[in-house]
Length: 493
Image (cartoon, rainbow, N blue to C red; front, side):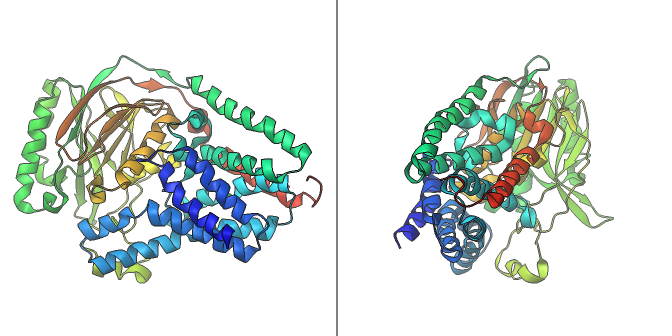
């Protein structure tokens, strides 16, 4: 019973390691408690404890889903609570699966093998599985907790999963100090500082370099209330607002509007407002990137998009859609959701995977819309050709919850992994410029109208993560499990 409590406590502590709390050390403590609860547990008990951990982790960590459904999705209190609870109950199955696997297949392995190889590897592989299964939900992966911690230097080499492994490995090493025999314990005392020192030392490595002179960019944050954004009587006011904010910053080489900042279809204003703004942008030698929906009437499809106006014209169509927000997965099973939610434009089409890179301010860029910036592997598309990253989002759906901070934390990781500046424009925040090391250069206040300007340096070169992606980490961890399965009981204390 005590170990059951430890697992639940560990799950409740884990969200506090993420933004906006940022107590990164709690991630190591959290997994230490979970691994302790799995120690010598039966498969069923380990699964139950993993499930308890997941209830704490996701029950607190994704509680913002209720805000999105109730405050902005049109669902009532009971329906919002029920749907949020269903999501949490489902997500908790992932750590439950991890617990079952470590106890079922590795329960009789030596202590040293379990704590240093098996537990960390299974945890990260389950995170990876959660990141793509059923289109993926990579929220609350423990590697993100180290974005502002000394271990962050590993991210350009291994991506977020490498950081997750370091956190899990440190948790296993701490437990090994108490459970391993005397001889292996000496190895632990050596391995702990070596692992930390190696990760910290990587912070001094510059994987990318400037590709040209800095240019001035401006990010617009209109702070349009979500409940009025799509009302027909508010459309002209919104368009006028963004046009006026744009015209006040023609001294910038690049001006970026947030996701769906223009609350109309592209063709409706292509030859009026957009034609005028494009002519002005060319006259000032500037470029505009604008979030807007694009309709294809012939195919009866529409897309969440970014269009570029100015020196180079183009468009980017969102490739990875948000389940239940932009499309309904497994419609026969989840069709009832449409009966309780009133999300507008809830069946968007996905863009092609091989779209041409947008160009703005004289350089190619990697564009992402909203949720796409939480997917590290997909964010590699277009690199190393692109000189910087642009993300547009509308986190107004999250309200004043922890979700916007968690989302921004994941977006910052993409800058660190790629060694490039990130320019992020959102409707209500968090709008910010992020350096190639993942540090915040400047940030607009949330829930205020703002225009944020900064100098951006185009970058070239590749980090190891850009070249190889997640595959090396996943393959190494899989190999560690193979070693763990084949290691004879008693070969190592």
